[in-house]
Length: 99
Image (cartoon, rainbow, N blue to C red; front, side):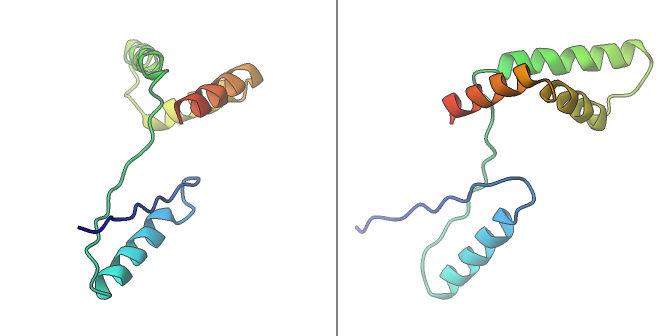
């Protein structure tokens, strides 16, 4: 039994990773190779509980004010939080520790 290979694509959102990976899979299959495509999104494990609480608090405050849950609101609040240099560095440090 021969060993297989693992090819990993990483990068920022929208950079074309999925497109390139699917093209590679198609070309390798055309060459007669047994190929599998697996999609996985990185998740912040060490801060998962805190992130869940943070999102829950936002959703709760939106429902109390009568507003509907909106992912754009959560994204804007996350961006505002990450604009703070302290939170941004803490996020980056925890990212590298998890990664």
